[in-house]
Length: 390
Ligand code: KG4
Ligand code: ZN
Image 1: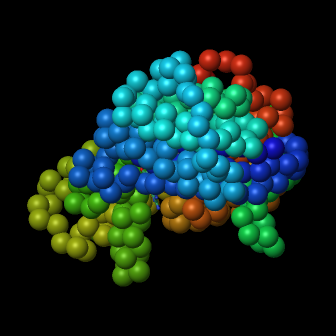
Image 2: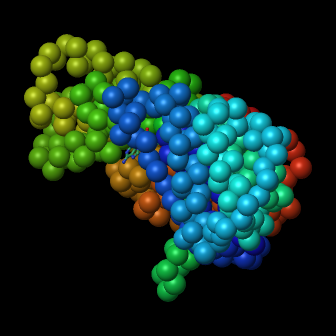
């Protein structure tokens, strides 16, 4: 089965074409084409993602990236002269976007694709709508079924995906032991979710305020570092650790001793704000020490709450997904935790798959399809605050 997947939930425009075989127990994937454009540098001056800019960028990038991805997959034939009716383009709203999509669909022959998958939430609504309406237009013009995929489900499946080292661009997912506990840590989310059966989720804990990635980004901004802040903070923290010695900075670990698996990061961020204000001009070393202590505090909170969730839920698989899953210091903390639980297998995404991408959306769509749970009938809406588990 060939799947065209589209991801536009935040500041990455991503398109993938993959071929998938197998079933929910054991599935194999060949990446036929993949394009990703990150807008991060454009949002940098705002210190975070600026929704209307993200939407405009997605509108500009979707057609060129889809063209390029189909070309990579050997599925692009642009010698047609199709007539595109108004109802196909109507949902796109914006005139220049409509024109770009119209020109693309007029000239492009229906590709050999069996299913279109698009992220329909959670995320920034204007950004999500751009991808959803684009997917609807392709689906209607080409008469290919369309399914909506939850972005966080994508992050879970991207952690389960293993590269096949013998053949380039091939991946597989095998022997996922359930129940699965997912620690989802990104710029918009911080959640502990269980999956006892495929696609049946329960919320175990979540942030009461800021997401951990958001806290990384805000603290980075307080220290005068670039957006996205996660990798910057991490690099500064590493320098402080390499220098060694006691850290003169101390920050709180919010909610560490509370019973629940919920977390909170806004107090930690505010503590950094006051600290920075009281310290006045910061030296490079001060910044590195603050980054180190902030990263330690974030790791302590996440590892401790994951430990608690393991004790309650007894998972066989622990999955860490979302942009913050790239953080090696947090990974090491989780590895240490899992070393005390030999019956749990820990998965995190391969490098290049931690951040937002369309591969994970295509894979999640295939897994859903193979479990008979890819809904292609429902009218698709973008839902900014959609949640996998209540
Ligand atoms: O999943 P993602 O790419 O987008 C969302 O869905 O939010 O996550 C982006 C977040 C940003 O907040 C970014 O600062 C953070 O992931 N991030 C990191 C690291 N790399 C990215 N946070 C901590 N350490 C990292 N190495
Ligand atoms: Zn994400």
